[in-house]
Length: 97
Image 1 (tube, one colour):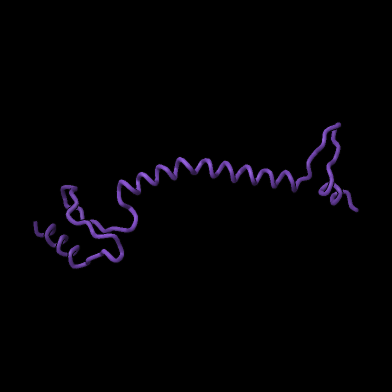
Image 2: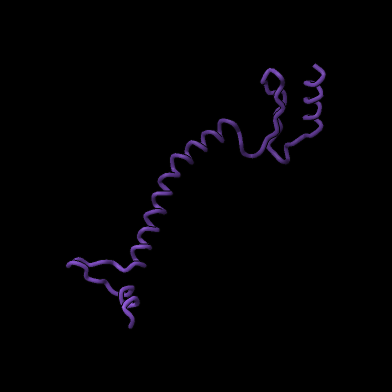
């Protein structure tokens, strides 16, 4: 067996301490990274959930905002709730005022 193969399959002794094979260290690092990513995403998911709820961002909606920044039209939940004629009427009303 070549030294590299042996090092992968068994622990090496370096200065009296056991050294784990590279594959095991890599696996442990990947597991730790996955845990850190999951922990980092928890607060973000909470914030995104609050934003989504506050702005009814899902499912999709269509809005028409007038020149004063007021919502002139809010569609139903899309895509089934989209009413193009109603939205067009809201746009015409804004454009004629």
